[in-house]
Length: 288
Image (cartoon, rainbow, N blue to C red; front, side, top):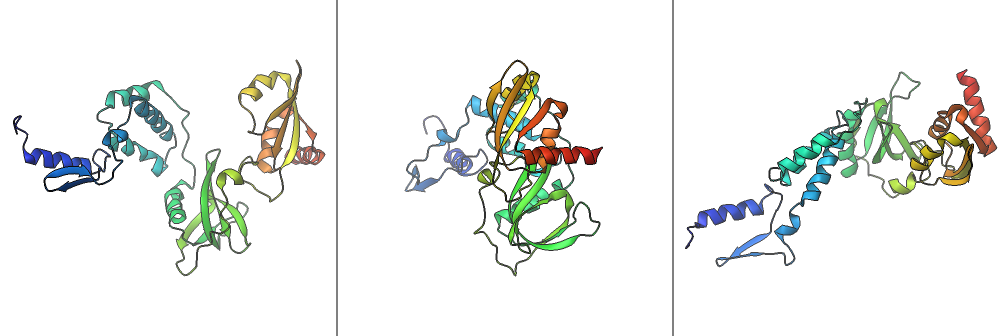
């Protein structure tokens, strides 16, 4: 009272701290004229962002903006507004001005990302109308969605495919439409961990086979590139000379892996397994 602070001012400050206006949501309890937190370990200062936090979030938002047309990425900037952007606006703008990412164009099917994410979170069974790549007619399938995956700017959904009694991947750009079927129970006992599920896979195509040891011999000129940007986390260098570099990978063999190897043209040779080398030769012959 000596400095002229009114009860109304204090009440307004408490209201702001209790709310999400500054992102605090402070559990403030007022009892018999005393103000306290009703959660013993709660501290507002633990929620305050450091300058380094703001820099990191600002860089992440700049990255999110490169994904054109994806709603939940474009809305991330509003998160920073709730996390003291006004206080650190200078830092935010500085980071935005000094960092640049490759612009990723919008891809077909992105409009399904948000509704499918909600279906996964709410554990909803879908009647999904899907048109295969080589078909002009869409078919309806009972589908239990588990998680979304991006690969080379194309989005996919993985879930339990009831007709085949297995986990199946669908490309979002081939989905015509879908609807929620509340009459069916959501199957979640078969939900795999995305990290484990794709640990030994490049891309999204899974053929239920075990990972194989793949040995590739590259032109020695590619050694710096292969060492700085490994083809996969399982990559190990077996031999390195002035003219060649031999690497070993532990992966399931699928279409995406084959395409990756073929992209190196004459600079790569498959040493093992022989079946993979034969498969690549067949693909080359068909392309010709």
